[in-house]
Length: 221
Ligand code: ADP
Ligand code: MG
Image (tube, rainbow, N blue to C red; front, side):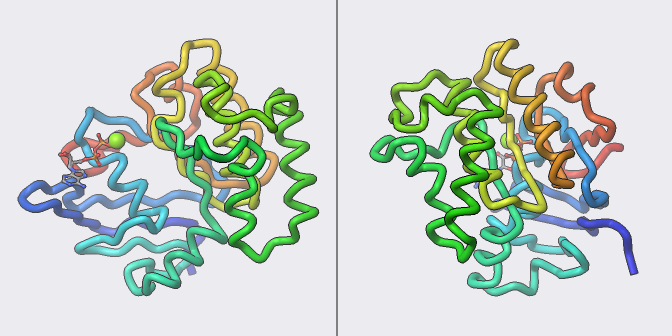
């Protein structure tokens, strides 16, 4: 039995001739907080997509809680994403046709979780993140930092075991970067969520107890 939550074993992922991942091997502990760094094109986003079940490895295995994601069919992968994973990306995936609260509650509408509990949790998160007064507004009425906080609430609304963030502060100023990173770390520790944050920002990476660097589709250390 392994105590690692996620095990990436000699994983390869090719896009045509490009080897986005080329034998990456790495383990993540349950509840650990990880910064994933490396030059542009080193395979960080690809690794995140495979861990999050948004795509499949060509070779090797991605084990989560001992289950090999490669063996999941599309339905099982969708269920895994919905039940276990929260995503926060640099570019917001908020729908401008819905107000913020409807954007936040979208995933819970598709899941079987108790809606009253989710709404309570969302209200509490909005309060902690200082955006309670923005929930009825539309995404285009918010600043980048505010939109990112709405994204974080949506990602955490279903209590994911795993929170995957791809350059979550990539388009934020240093003040909002600080706020967002603090919140991600605090909320993840409070919930025992495993947190993986891809970042270019050295000062963001240095905050994490685990720092993983990628190069040419492999883990450097
Ligand atoms: P990073 O996030 O570290 O910048 P990526 O994982 O996005 O790196 O990309 C790794 C390599 O794979 C890059 O060379 C990139 O151009 C290529 N790549 C990523 N996604 C695709 C795709 N959907 N189609 C073709 N090439 C891709
Ligand atoms: Mg990337």
